[in-house]
Amino acid sequence: MLVKIGVKDLQAGMYVVDTGLSWLEHPYLFNQEGEVRSQGMARDILAAGYTEVFIDDERGDFARTRGGSGGMPQESLAEMLARGPAVRSLPAVPLAEELAVAKAVYEDCLHIAHDLLREVEAGGRVDIDASQHMVDDVISSAVRNADALLALCKLRRHDAYTFSHGVNVSVLAVAFGTSLGLGAVGLRELGLAGLFHDLGKTGIPDAILNKPGRLSAREFEQVKAHPRLGRELLDGQGLAESVLRGVAEHHEKWGGNGYPQGLAGEAVHPWGRIIGVADVFDALTSRRVYKEGVLPTRALGVLYSMRERDYPPGLVERFIKFMGPYPVGSFVRLTGGEHAFVRGSNPARPLFPELLVAFDAAMRPTPWRVVPAVSDVKGPSAIVQALDPAEYGIDPLQYLGEAGR
Image (cartoon, rainbow, N blue to C red; front, side):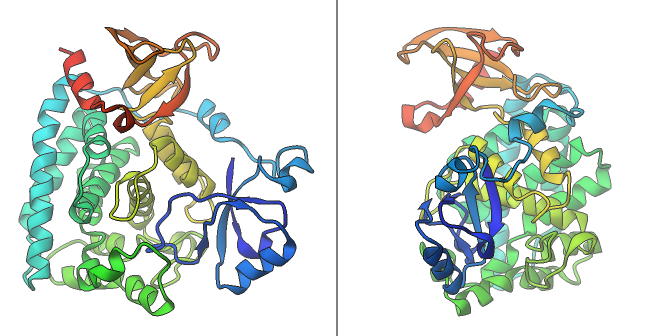
């Protein structure tokens, strides 16, 4: 499993993993994948200014000489998912029914976010009223069936990451907030903070925002200012202080190694913590100018390795349980060889969602059939691998929308 450690703790034989996290937000993260060949190499990485690294504690000589666990016994992601209470209630309406409504809501959100950013870039003011109406529509859809908007924000492919990212973070934060039991006021604040969280990047040159390689120290200082700049753009427009703090603190970390203020622990506002988790998940799973997104299952694994260092105890675990290791719309291969789409979450047992089987082992279309959540991990309908539907030229939304009619 992935483990996030400080570079000062890196040892020869450890296997470094490239998580897909962007240089833009994590310039001090060493992510050149491969085994650390010597202690001298570990010292060179530290001397180069890197401070953090993700390792796979089941790979490399360091793990093999310590019984395959890297000497770091930890609860696995699967073990965490198998225990504890569910955090999501059953949807009020079927997925296929809500998808039709959610598509219109999501498209409206993208238009509003696009206009909002263009207006701010031109020196205008943020349209708070339009933003609040947008978030209210997101809340209504999330309450009816959170999976519909979640599937849309992760399955629709957009080249314009700049404004789709704000919408996606707003959707993820609101949907997660409903599972945490937040009321209407809290959900609206959270949704607005998610929508506005990167507003301050309008003051950063595109050459920096789209840079594929590591940022220089001076460039990163500019990037680190964007949460503060975002708050300044929103000051004096009647927004709640909690919204402003969510924007200003979404890059602060539980362990105090975030920015721009270096806040730690309970000093970080709850909205900042939630937006931070949603921000990382969407950034990892979204297509960018300089990289493709990773599968949600891998993104959740990265987040899980950041728990308690970057986020408070329990927050990441609850987010993963809410999303499920195979979010709705995931394309998966089953133990029997068939291929299916995840059609419905299973709050009580996240590892066993409801499936829509659509292809055989050779990827030939078969008559669709819905397979209830399975309990036998060795049964023919258990999931063995998550796949990228884009590699097969498949649009999961087509199947999810039509299968329930």
